Length: 289
Image (cartoon, rainbow, N blue to C red; front, side, top):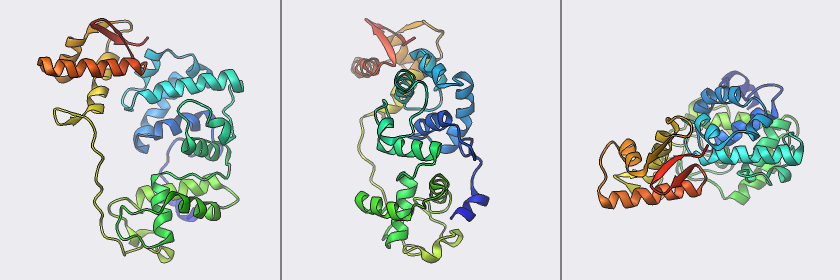
């Protein structure tokens, strides 16, 4: 695995011999719901605006939301900033290396705490992202379809045994890369896989069909998409500039709202305001600066 990774790995900015814990911390939050290549493009620009944990901690809501442009799921930006504030206040600006301490930070759950500790400090933690779960499952036991994975408890037990004592960060990067490039979700390239000879599932799976969870829709698109578009309109406004909710609807959808649609949109704006991304003052809304 490690030999394959050395020549096959993509040159992503957080994959360096001597990692910067701050870069790892920011990149792991970005990677939670954004593809790696997109993060690779955005991360250097973001770090230019916030070159240290203290710069990030001091950022206003509007500033951090504007810098998050193009990343999606904007609430992550606020959790990242809030976590930075806790790190400055309680850890004197040093990213914790202990997963238990990391889990006390806003927006940092079991996976993120394990991955930050592993990739920033080479800690032998169990990192199980979607790619690693898929690879481990296929190695362990024949999976009937490409969407099948083993139970979480079984994966935890397997990971505890297979993770090498030395260079666990390199190991996890290698398995993640295998899952991203070769052992993919829909069409695994078993003929190109360096582990096909020991993989229980190689050349033996049929393609599975994943049933997506139902989510709130508006005009045949998920509500979260409209939420992001509304924030994007406000993000393009000058600092402190306001707009009416009705005008925001028109700018977001490029249409005039019916009364029923306007009711739905006002509810959406109220939810975004409750999340702290925007300020709603009567019928006027602006980015939270």
